[in-house]
Each structure stands twice: as structure tokens, then as C-alpha cells.
Image: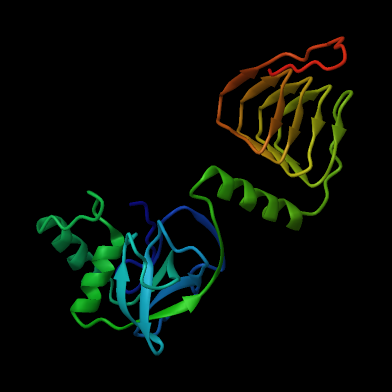
Length: 237
């Protein structure tokens, strides 16, 4: 459970989960009394927390149910006035060893707040989930589409926007893009990189990378081949 806290003594703004939000948490000095839980309606709510409501108020929060009873999902952004009650509830789920999928969940702490009478509203939010490689790549595409074009130049290379190339990246004899993000310090030579994320300080050579995520400091080496192939021949590589 990863979350950040500000204005601890009076109100709490918290974010959890894996995603990218636009304006995730209200930035007001004084927060209205009901807690605010950001949510989003999705087609497939499996594998995420679910929000049940009655009118404008939340009645139940469920962490990753096997059979989701609704398609309004928890987006992991919260604005809570009664931070003292929240921390008491979090301590209580640990003391009572209340776990979901064998983990202590922030959602269970928030549900306990509801059971103690705390009122919560749900507010819509625009977000991009990044919990799987495909979701991360889709988020990368969406972000790159909104970026202002950059004039990247590298030796013997072709850059097809939209792309992002971090400071210190070394690229030679390579086609980059579209929808490729290359982290700072990465080294790419004699490759084709499209619709992919290459993390900082990774090294790639002689490869074709498509819809892939390459982690920091990873090394990927391949080879391009030349063939003379006769008719009616099939080769699987």
C-alpha cells in the first residue's frame, strides 16, 4: 500500500494504486466535511476496487471482488477531512488482522470509516490505468499524443513522432517511433523501436521492439539476418 499524505493534522490528501490522473486530488485549503473518493465508470471492473453508491453518497467500498457488483471503480485518489478516524481505522484493521487477498488494504480502512458513520462522496476523474504492460503502453501513447513535438536528431537515425527521448540517450542507426519513450542514458543501436517504453540506462542493439517495456539497466541484443529464400519455403525464427 503506497500513499502520500499532506496537511496531516487537519485534512488528508492521499493517492494509492498504479495510474496517472489529471487533477486527482482537490487542492483547497479547506475540504468539505464529506470525504471525497475519486471514481471512474469502466466496462470491465474486474481486478480493481469497487464503489457502491446511494444517491451522491458511497455506501460500500470493496477491494477487488471476484464478482464485481458495480462498474464504478476506485481510482486511488482521496480527500479526507477526518484523518484521525482514518488512521484509527487503519490501525484497527491491522490489530484485527483484516486482510483482503492476504494484504492490508487502504480500501478496508475506508470501508471501516463508512461503518463508523463517516460520509463519503464519489467524484469523477480522468485517469489512465498502468497496472499491466498493455495499460502502461496505452498510457504512454496517450501522454505522447499530448506532448509538444520535439526536434530530436541522432546519427543515421529516423525519428517518427510522437516520441520522448530522455537526456543523455545515445541512439545510432535506429528508427524510433511512433509512440516510443526512451529513458535518459539509454543506448540504442541498429534497432527499430515503436510503441514501446525503454527505461533509463537500458541498452539495445540489433533488435526490433514493438509493444514492449524494457526495464532500467536491461540489456537486449539480437541480430538482423540476410536470407536468399527459394519458392515455396517457410522459415520460422
